[in-house]
Figure 1 (cartoon, rainbow, N blue to C red):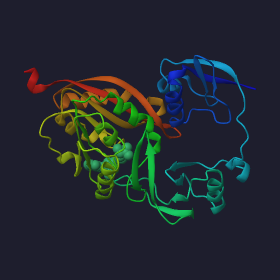
Figure 2: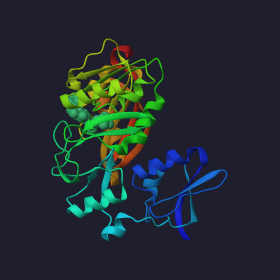
Figure 3: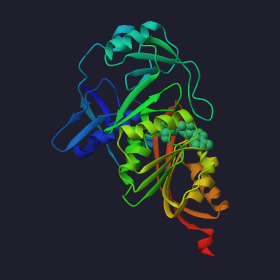
Figure 4: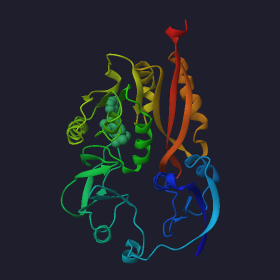
Length: 335
Ligand SMILES: C[S@@+](CC[C@H](N)C(=O)[O-])C[C@H]1O[C@@H](n2cnc3c(N)ncnc32)[C@H](O)[C@@H]1O
């Protein structure tokens, strides 16, 4: 048994909290999660800053408990002597850095459903936020099918943006939507926010500027049998709605700020905007809340920040965050 710090939650919240910790890179690997009749005990990584933990799992009890080590299935580390960084999207593994072919083979040996291992040869770049890849081993392809919360998404990783690490966030947003809402997803990609949201909303307008993303978005709309959704290939700045939206999703973290004026125009007073950004660890929410409020004020809009949350770690010292913003008034209405 090993003594380790852990987050303690009621059983009903165990799975959601586990996912949240995994996506933030904070769940300790190699230790078995414990549970009793009432609570689940989730071990966290060593030397975790209390401030970060409080942001990722706000209000959660933190304790120190004994944990068993996980059973020793053969791991990639056993095979290679080190743990390569990668993520799995459908049946494709995407490594974080360039590796030797035997790394790809080890990933496929341990994760037997993985059919292809890709190495990015560029960063996530350009307006469409895409990467180029080289096949490290397995089948020569970049297309895959990914499942999340009962939905299915087809995509070509070389042509569209996709991150499996936003899964908890996508569910969090979809869960807030009610059946009378008109929702605009300003940067919809292949539809992982827009399609689950459409299952709950009155209507969704899903916009993306990348024609390949919109092609997959249309395909995914069919695959998931949603009808109350419109896929639009357009610059979000050009979007016109027939009536003001109740909610906007702005998942373009590096540049969403430049589109805030458009979101303020599209969303009605009382409506909500989910605003994403990338923030340095030493100033996660401090600067950005003020900046967003100042921008709102320049646009003649009053806002209230309902909620701020770390979505996931983005790089060693940066976090992907979300602000849920309510528009509380607009200039014309206040005069
Ligand atoms: C970070 S991705 C998010 C995609 C999707 N929401 C998801 O969670 O997978 C941002 C998306 O915004 C699109 N995009 C970038 N600039 C845009 C613009 N000016 N108007 C509309 N879409 C844009 C990109 O093509 C990309 O698909």
